[in-house]
Image 1 (cartoon, rainbow, N blue to C red):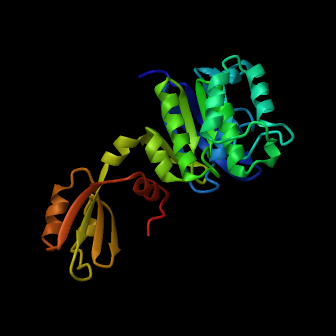
Image 2: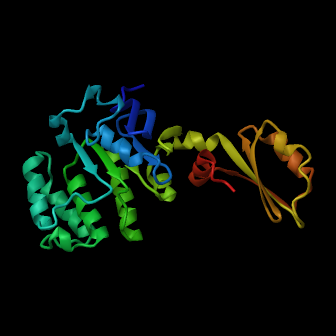
Image 3: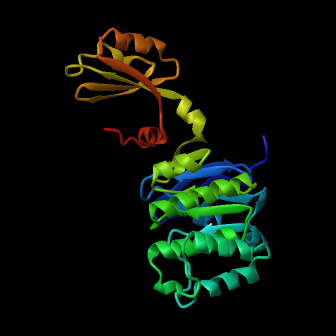
Length: 294
């Protein structure tokens, strides 16, 4: 296994008696697209700030390629904060020129392509742009530097569906070129499309992490449809192979471990009208993890 590009070790952040982040350990390898998920207030933005020295951790460490973050490393890292960090009085063109002077890797031609992709007029002042346009300009600045590491906090926020898809394409393209991407999103479908690994936070704690395909294959969902209300389960709910059961009128959804043949036979014995087995999607995984299934 390769050494991680980003290593968070027991990262903790307290504000007085409130613990915003608790003992977070996470390793992210080169070329990985890591999606950070969690309800509002889960600690996603705090994680980014502690990683980048924008907030001092109460304890724990964040290292990049085995070393603490130093100012020179910022030339290789692009950070998109959740709230705009643009200068309202400056035009898009002035922001691009500022980045060109700071980042030796800044690609002027690429910036022009991205401006066209997001339909941005570089002559406009940042303060006159909509929230989505400000996000788009910040994305142009981030990707035009061709960084080795991208840390993106809600990168599709405020964008229309077409440009949201463009952002995901840019993330996938950057990773294919060797960049490492860590991003957060409230939209699980976005993470599912772009990420190969995920971490789920709840109340500042890491509750699940891993490779998306492996997490999906860890469980199956068996859907049984009846002509009448779901019958008695006859001990199915206490079966060790069953992770959870959902009743929805005439449908019974049973979440089972991968070895589900025995459970399927038990369900067939209940004589449903139809019986289907599906892999989990990322929404199922997320809702199971944060305990918000009804």
